[in-house]
Length: 379
Ligand code: 3PG
Ligand code: MG
Image (cartoon, rainbow, N blue to C red; front, side, top):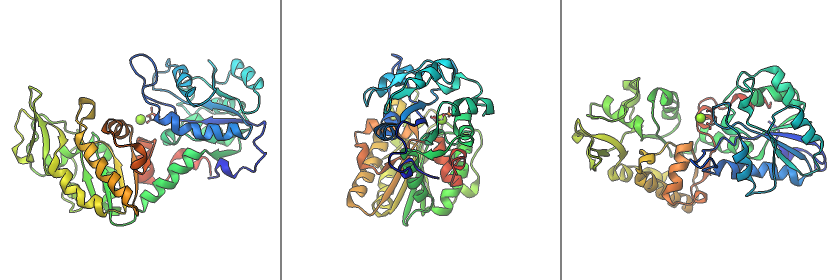
């Protein structure tokens, strides 16, 4: 995988460069971008190319509904620099706008998923996208696990490079594949069946694997604890996973009654009316020494239902990690859209926690397979 910073100075000047970014960001009820994390991280590559005199044509998807427009993303990106939104993907409006570009200018094309050929990895669509530019750059790590036309199709037709964000993601997540010891993985989220492969893989590579969030309920249940009305996955985890001595299940939980009152309890005391919404302070205390000793921490998934305000234990873990990062000699990668959103509420500054991955599904798939279709397409 070649990165754009390997392109000799001067060679980018005047070149049309198609940058596939992942600007699939959450939208607020006001129709504007609600979180700029991916925009901020993706802007670095765009700026780099623009400063080298390239004509930068940015393409991304937004959401899953084909009618969604990416125009609000262009408005949000103007915090970082000048960018022109083009209400077209690869038709005559886009071609004319690109032909009129001056060196260093930046355009944003319309939502790639407006064209059904994007998700089908249709070759004719990949060719049309490729015809817009002379160089292709993939900086869309968070969607590099999808075999979409703009991810795996376009690099067949243009000289192709990784962007700076893609390079950083691959670097840090490669370290997470072979962590320094002692190492700790913290995994949350729902639907155990979707996390089962990564938990099994972490159990082989990491010294300890802590399950939090809804998937911890499945492990508690498998270990014979009552879980009341808590969220439970369709497929129960295997006994050998839940009984693995490296697996850490919550020592206590925050349980909410039907009347919305919440109490910290021992898992054995969960009542039929209770819904587990978070871990508890004893679980944080149990994790503290592992965090303090760790040389590597990977974290994906908040500890509780942060959308309902249960963020205090996610924050407590973040604070322990921030302290550990401050002492030095430890690397960490933290990812998943929900984790990042929950951490935003925690008040612990992003810069104090190590590397934040922009990927959710892509991060987990990379950690499982060591590569992604979008990365392979750049080889
Ligand atoms: C994401 O936000 O996870 C990526 O942009 C991929 O989006 P998708 O899950 O709709 O393919
Ligand atoms: Mg997703």
